[in-house]
Image (tube, rainbow over all chains, first blue to last red; front, side, top):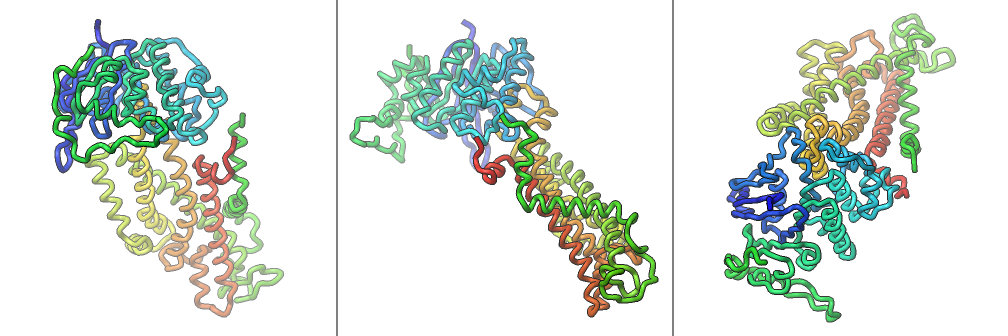
Length: 280
Length: 284
């Protein structure tokens, strides 16, 4: 099967006072209609990878290929129509919407991008309905909405562009616990209804288990474990994955919080274990 | 659903905004019509000298026997249009330079901003005095001098806004949807720059009037016998016991500067939807 997205040996470095290798030879693929989750702690390179996938980050080496064409850097020039089917939902809902433009109009821009690619037109109201917002919100401004509503609007806008690949960079981390699961679940449904691939980035393994077909665990820029979500959840092989799973608080009424991750990460977390990769 | 035109009056209802707008519009009206209806020729020196305010000379006469009321009203037509022109010029040049610096970044930004810093490092009035002194004292040169010192603030502001906007997620989202650079500027960047710049401009009208009057007061702007407020106050210094000579031009400057500042303040509320809510209360 030809892959929708293929990331091969991607390296991203930030050159400041010291060179930081945020993503270190990462390879992954996403097929149409597949939900791939990328999990890991803050600073492990998840977001850098996501930004590179849409072309917002220049890879040091390696390639990001979308439908057998390399994804171009998102520069000052206009993005070609063939790549407008890659859409992104950002982590911070507060800066994802233009404060001066009504919600409906912003969704219309997404619709326009879809129409320019030859998709059939639609109404902003439909998309609002699909993400569970009242249709009267078309005439609102972003600042009149709550954080969760803004994030839903951002999702609606991205979906209105009828993406074939949706990259979601921690879309639920800014939401309250009660709506996290529902938004994540909604994203899965909507992406799959549209036949799109979804790259879902999160640090929350518990939610990822519910929505992702496959899961990739990153640690310090490298993939340490990857494979079918259930397998990784029920039978983690890599010590880092085990640590991540044991860090999930359990609602057992005892009010016990999991131990804070060790300040000095054990050396074994950095090991790459061949048996932990591409588990099926 | 609220219609758009209903929203703006809601913000205009702030009392200071209304008062400011009324006074500012009145002064602008006076500025453009005064010559048609003032009771005396503002340049004619045929009235009794240093006459206190009374029935026929509302604000008295100056040391040369000219009617202060007539001079004050025609003086509005000298200062206000020039101040407006000055603000528009600074706004256009400053915004353009700032937008170029912010949008292209790198060495273009570095070059333009160091130039801006250079100009801003001078005390405003001193630099304006130098320019006016170098080009010779005249009202037109005073405007040029004031322009030299007032464009950098627009450049700075525009640049910082554009710089901040360029990496905003919604700008990125637009680019991902295939916006052309022009559309990004028009849809995502310009609307978020216009508001703050217009607010700055309306607040700056007051400053421009102060600066032009100040230069005239120092003798570097309007030359006699032009009826300009700053030079009228300057003339009053020689006749301290005739309080009316300086008081009325001073009041004129005070009211017009405050009026434009009030307008600027309420414009800020109109152009910034977030502060509109905090003022009007969260609307449903």
